[in-house]
Amino acid sequence: MSSLSKFIYTTSSHIKANYLFVSTTILAVEIILVITYNVIKAKIRKMRNTRVKKLHFIKFPVVVQKRIFNFMNTRDVFVLSLCSKKLAISVQNCKSAQQYMTQMCYKTFVRHQHQFVIENEYVLLLVPDLILKAGLWFWCKDFELEGVRFRVENGPDGSLILWSINSSFKTSHLAIDKRLRSIHRPTSEIHLNINSKDFTTCLPHIENINYAFLKNTSGINRRFKSADIEQLNMKNLVICNPIDGRFENDSGILNLNHLYLTNAGSTIDLPTWQFNGRHLWLSGANISNEDVIHCLELWQSGAAFQNLESLLIRTEKGYPLEPAMIYNQLDANPWDSDRRPQYYVFDENVRYFNFSNNCSKMDFARYLDIEGIEKMASIYIMPHCLELYVWKL
Image (cartoon, rainbow, N blue to C red; front, top):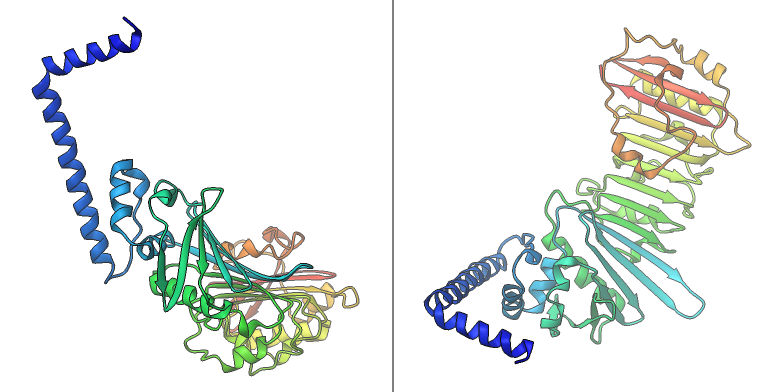
């Protein structure tokens, strides 16, 4: 008798001898699977009309996953795949030698990454997502999202590909953008990364964006003048190589929480700016010692920059700073640990922008103190770098 025959004979004998136990076990497993499936199905039905929450399908048995994916339509799976505690959105426009391509990358902070590659009239959604990989082969359907028809396919690398059907880039983008905004929680972080000539055509709605990085962009002045600043919730904005000309006092960027201008040049007139945010960082700025002194005197008197918590400036080679002269004009005092507050209000998290390797060391023993009306700040100046941090009294 072969090994296989022995195994079959032994197994059959065991089942016959313990028929009641085996039958009961199989029935119990089936009941558990049915109950689990019904519970999940009820939750999904309820979620369709309420705020979507994240489900960890990967923790369920494969049989349960298969039943869940068979029950849900593709629209539900697409929505669930983009739900997480924090979501970062990066939009990059680039022009290659072969063709014009727009790439949008939706990346979460919790081990999931969603990437949109928009090419001509097609939209590809790549989702290397652990939640979806277990059930991708169970469904490949067409579905409608905000009036746009999409076709779902499984990519060669196991990712999810989403194609738009007979829709332009702008229409497809608006459909995806609207769906994302409908599922975000208030605590979600939306990051926008644009490398395009025209900022206004890349993302029409910016009210819910937390962080933005704009490179080689125009239309910034026009966009922020027309936007309703009271509803604008953008917390941090990086503008690299602005090509709009000077930013005037009526620009909405003066109301942003954190503004970082790289290669600022002469696009700003710092002493005349009524900056209402907390963090102002300028790189490659053409600013004189007199302008720096005037700006900080306005802060000391409370005439401007009243909400300022940090001011970081890096100047161009032709605009060196003179630390001794600035310290003298501002009546800077040597460091005194007894007079300083015990804690600093500056948020270290905003340093992820990596402003400067030379200005990132928080060694306050090098800093001098300057005082304003009911406020104090520590300042450190090098020939081409100035750091100022406001202390909470």
